[in-house]
Length: 320
Image (tube, rainbow, N blue to C red; front, side, top):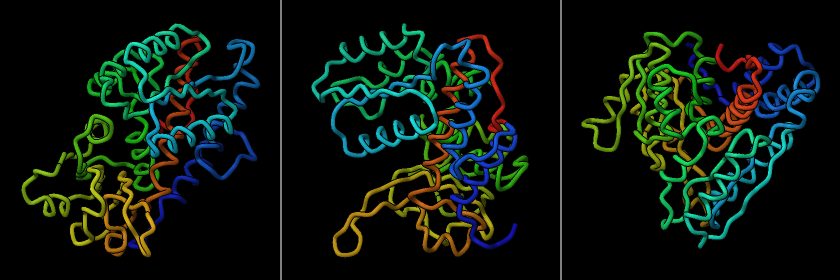
């Protein structure tokens, strides 16, 4: 691989253009999220409106006032609307009961106009997040967190893959092509990123190791990898001397730390300054994985709507 550092922001934009080309639609924004969503929107003009009756609809549910969650939900809503889909935010107070939240989800499950349900995590401590995720109809679980979708991913069935690992896989395939035989290390074992990321890489015939904070000699495990996916939630944990020359690094972490003059800044789980001097390709934080997460979320919403209406699911390039 070319040893030059390749910023994945550009890779994401290139991927967006590839999706546009595959659908023979011209003149879209150089933004992967807009590309995917506008393709879906333009498809609706010719194919979906007579059948669906109206635009795709993916309501967002936010409980409480967590600052990071507010930003995430706002960005999801902005991109959803820009892509020609309907979106509405159900903003609930932090003292909302679990029963009230479950009642809202049941209402959205039963609404045929709703194609995807986005419940932002974390929820307040008095609410069982697993009970909330389990209550979402798996067919509308476009985040891919429901146990039914997790099982489908593990067994090769039809379901939704979680959007962040799915977006990471897109970046890897766009950069490296065939991943078969490559050694991949996933640092982190969460249900949202680490475990599904490992499943997706296994599906691509990688040799996969799941590492974590208690892994013995973690730096050495990482050095053996052609692909490193960092999703452990610790700022700058993975140093440049952990990375093999030419390895591809996907940094999923997003951590708020104090920078110069006391100002807060965002950093990943990988120490970018040192790792970028060694890696063949590395994602920046912010701006690397995030846009692809939203792109995959919109793609899952389109898939959900097609399945619900008995239509063939269009290939926008995500599975190529």
